[in-house]
Image: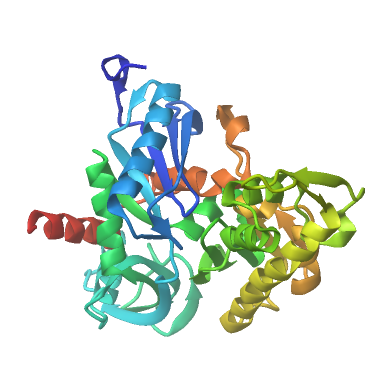
Length: 412
């Protein structure tokens, strides 16, 4: 579709841009005026080049990948994409706890949204290394005049309000490079959102987030772990072992090229021998005139299983480190493109010793059925996160990040 035939992006259209290690995905969704629900208008994907373990390593290649994905989404939706909500991942992401305190100066001592905003702004003053920037400030609980366990203090009376806050930070240069790629692709970044936080909006039920659940998003370059309890993210971490390492193991183990290895993983791959119902024999074309090889599913599984176990054991170590491993009645939800590897959920159940299910994003309208796949969890979650932010009050923490980025680029 020619650019002049595309209509400008209206305010009610949200676009999620998932810039991953193996793919870039742009998802266009419209907020319905009557129901407030989302209708997916279009989605575009492109192979990701220039990203390694969630971090930009080549700006030109990343810009090209973004441009291709956006063009495909524009073609399908008929919308000229101008503004995007961008996901960020990478093992440079850190989460730490801090406390913040303010006094309530209103004559009637009633706590308002402005007081909560002051509390979060106070948390922003925490000492940070010069190479890090705050992405999110997530209140864990509020304490009013010594009474703890409060989830929403607005409307309460008090003199002194404290909060335990989870501060999620990222490497400043990683944020700047990501922002630069988006701008060079001709787009405006409305918001930068931690990917596991976004994915949680797409695949977790409110009840799961309330009672306690771990979300493990296994993508191509990174695995994202996020723990939720009482509706709030309590712990999050990202590590750089994921689906691409499984593909590389197949590639080196069988002596084939990367595209062949990826295809074998998707078509014949199993993470657990017990999930193989029939041990088929399939042929791999030879490289450079060599003879074709005959491989069985069980042999391929022997290559895949050790790496799949390693990824899940790393995730288990993070659950132990979080202190929430034994406080997850809803168990573990696996998502991300690698989550559909056959037998991975069974293997995870053995390793975690708790219920495990695959999380699928659910969007009812438009092309919702087409994006009901774990590989789209982050893209769907980004627009759902943005929609939720629109419905709630704007927080200084979100504005401050964008303002810092704009000031940085204005100074260049």
